[in-house]
Length: 241
Image 1 (tube, one colour):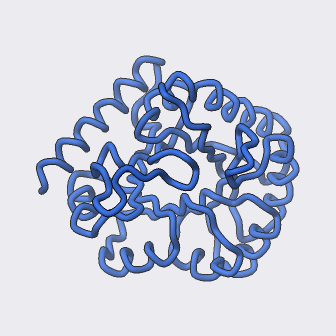
Image 2 (cartoon, rainbow, N blue to C red; image 1 turned 90 degrees about the vertical axis):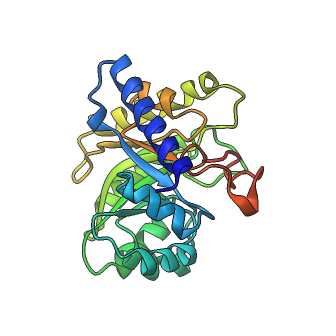
């Protein structure tokens, strides 16, 4: 196994454990999703050898090529990037979890195309930024109820990308806001709605996210290093995973 990926992975897993224990949480409650946008197959296989069991992809086509080559039933694939309706059919065939549902129109298309149950999260534009996708917190309850009525979708969580910040502490209020939003939705006891996942936190702030209740952290650069062909560039959401 590549020494750099191996060492990075050991470090990230240890930091996840420490962050959970700091706030009295069981580290097993937190799943590491290795954010693999533009990461080559070799590094992905090395991460899987090191214990990674969930991979996050931003693009449907890129994921399709990787899934073909990896063929590991133990690995769960998460779509963490924006999904267009015209790619819903292939998305439900490829992914175990779609974290980026941000409209009832997309949800209905996924429901129509799914051959069985598909797990989905609502993507929340937690700071109401015009440059980001996601539903605003004000409309999240309505969307949750609408998704719950779709028979082929199982709504289990919320996902967010906070605004870019120079320090992890800058992201904390947004992680708190997502947790409270999930609590508010759950307290509504809407039929078919039981949110158990908070997907929040990336390479620069995942420990803070865990302290505020994250059950899924999407970590890329801290595991794989800078992406060779896109070093220095950020994701569409404004931050590097």
